[in-house]
Image 1 (cartoon, rainbow, N blue to C red):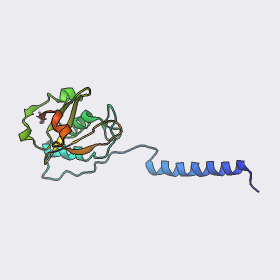
Image 2: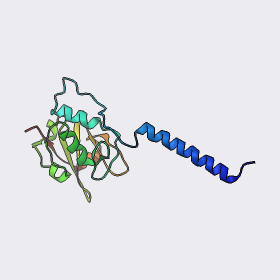
Image 3: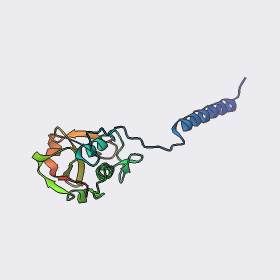
Image 4: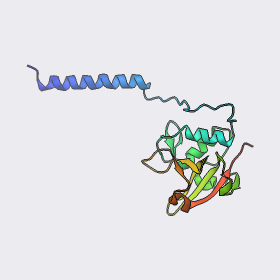
Length: 169
């Protein structure tokens, strides 16, 4: 006959064993970033296509306020900042400042890698990266993840302000 304390001890040991196995598999929580895309020779580093590819490699990463790295997650301007920096292009870290970075581009002249800028009432500026076919990638809001959306969606269409093209200096 076993006592309740033995059952509790067995459960604790089992949980400790499972936790140890999990830690061993994850390397004690240390994450090593490995991009989920490969740049092909047709995508020159620093090009708009390379910026778009870098941003796409982060699909599914969590929104984190102030985040600007794959290991921590991204806010909207952090994703833009990271994708550009990954390609040797300096852009401001804050959305409001990204709204005036580089060269102004008309909506009809958008190319992959351009920064798209929105002004959301009571929230302020929001930025993303244009990826082609009237789509952009962004980190939208708390409790969400990096995702692709269409500029044709009425919400984004209504709050669209400008687009900016940034290049290496």
